Amino acid sequence: MSVVILGVFVADTAYRAARPPRMGETILGESFALGPGGKGSNQAVAAACAGAETHFVSRLGRDPFGEMALKTWEKAGVRPAISFQEEGYTGAAYIFIEAATGNNAIIVCPGVAGEIGPDDVEAQAALIGGAAVFVTQLEQPIPAALRALEIARAGAALTVLNPAPAAPLPAGMLALCDFVTPNESEAEALTGIAVRSVADAEAAARALRKAGAGAAIVTLGAEGALFHDGARTAHIPAFDAGPVVETTGAGDAFTGAFAARLSEGADPLEAARFGCAAASISVTRAGTAPAMPSRAEIDALVARG
Ligand code: RIB
Image (cartoon, rainbow, N blue to C red; front, side, top):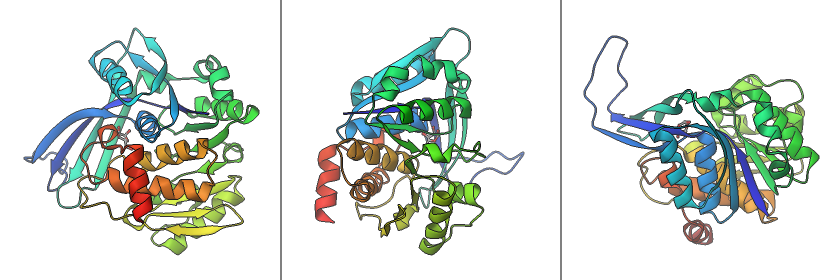
């Protein structure tokens, strides 16, 4: 049973510094790293590392960042369902990492993946409709995500939307989602409810269900996640996997590992706990895709509790 993910690959350019520069200012940073990123690609790597047969639908340019993408997927065991665009570039992200906390702020330019449309998705309809779990985010244009969710729904797939970066959704889009996995700010953007506590997250999750989602899992950083599927509400605490190095990609670790466990037929609440364990490990490492844990590491942390 496979996980199919539609999304974007970009090269992450990560700058670690005490604080971000002000407009017109230059500051010295502590370190720089270049590595694979993009929410959809990170989620595909996370799902594959967690043990799922994983396919990734996207578009690349013919350039060094596109080659980085192919190498990343080969190493992780992700199966690419990719089209290449001759004109334009594979995207990149500017990531500011606050040295004291590992927290981040991001600008992402999706490049040619920003031109993915419903036709690209139609070309992969058999793959998407035949998945056990289909996952997408909002870094590629929304019409492509919407059409892919429709195709997945018409097939046998469970559907997961990671609504990141936050954007207004067309009417009816949430009703195509069995699960939505926003973080605090994305939940607020979708519901108008400021999420500053577990209780706020529950209120937002209830609002997302009212808007049509089957279940909502609001990721809460160091506080773990709030799961609500109508019948059950549960706060899943984060796991203690060691000191936090970088939080970038933690939401992707959660969504990818959650999808992998769901594809095995796991109970969604148990799959969410598995996702939280994956995210808790990912924040102890630098980078995004390179920080995704193996199945053995996640299982060991879940068993330890
Ligand atoms: O979720 C983290 C990711 O968001 C980074 O890898 C960056 O590329 C942006 O897309």
